[in-house]
Amino acid sequence: MITAAQIERALRSHRLPGLEEGLPSEEFVFPNYGDYSLVRVPATLAGLLGLEMEGAMPPLPPSLWADLAPGVRHILFILVDAVGYTCFRLILETGSGLRRLTQAGRVFPLSAVFPTSTVASLPSLWTGTPPTVHGFVGPESWEHAVNKGPSLPLRGLIPPPYLRVADLLIKRRLPGNLLSPPNLALPLTKAGVQIVAFFYLPPPGNGLPRLLLRGTKRFSPNGVRGVESFIAFRDFYDFREMWANVREVLLQYRQEPLFLVVYWSGTDLLGHLYGPEGGPFRRALRCMDQTLESFLDSLPPAVREGTLLVFTSDHGMVQTPPDRAIRLSGHRALRRMLRRPPAGEPRMIGLHVRPDRTDALRAYVAERLGDRFLLLETERVLAAGLFGPDGASAPIQEQLGGLLLVARGDARLIFEKEAAPLYGQHGGLSPEEMLVPLLMARLDGEI
Image (tube, rainbow, N blue to C red):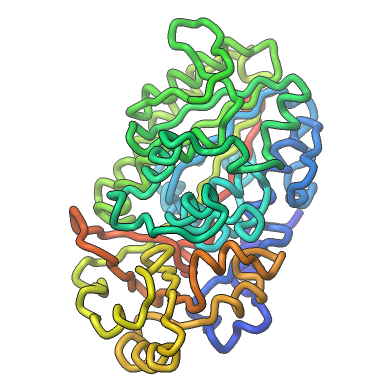
């Protein structure tokens, strides 16, 4: 079987023809939608239960997971936001919970999608399709999907976190086909697999998980089975409560096929506020590791039997000191060249340029911002496969405009005034953002 080190080398050396000059390979890791992509996780999860996921990208290579599949009836899928592969390996050096699982199972890196953001990654992790198919690349994607075309920009109208946009659209009775099939729930529910979800995402800001998990079951803390519910999750506020909830659900469904998804977004929030190198972010990960070990020790053999734990993240993060950020307010000439506010993420910025100002904007970026950002044509990066192997995507081009700024180093663009200084960001192509871990371990083995 291929080793984690070999997969990492393959991902770091991956190239997209047509972008070699525009994006220097020594600075960036390009998304890989081939064998070792996060987009292939949903079909892999279905495959572990002996199912197929029609319409999705195929599973990861069977050599990575097929030997774990015999007898699996329960999958515990843990998604921790903003934990890159490099960060994950640091946890293994100091923690013991995740190390126990890696020793009993296997861990290797995967390529995230582009942009390296929750808005792009969570739909890929539920539908098994890249951004070129599901069309979600930034805050503007929600309004675009509802209106089926460009509309007034939401940025500036809705305060961060931008996931609150989904809450707003839910209140406006968004269409039920906003995220159309495929999705992982279809083959699971058809086969009689129970789906339960837990999310750390106190409202407001829980619209995105609610969209992705329509049709799953809502767990009731009084022990009564959940009912089909539009709000398909229960909030929790710390790791101890999270693991206690997970244990209770595993006990409750121990006689039935089960897919239990747990999403922890608190690391992303702490990473933004303090940076991935900051103390609060690192302490949260240590706490997760410690409580995970207690959870593992608490599971009786009957619950462990046939249970597979899968751990991953949607993207990584880089340290972005506030005093190094570029403020759009300080570049009024650039603003006047745009026909609408910038789109996308602070490290992946879409520019809707006025028709007669393209050459002037190119010259401005080269002179004033060239050491912090690279400027590329959106059509070119789409054709090269940066957003997915499908190439052209009219919805993405409509959302992002004709030109794209890609951050270098620790650069980010502040579109409007921030409520608090942010020390961490994602959305770009650095190795820290692009490589994420995938850990798989049977809990009925020697842990």
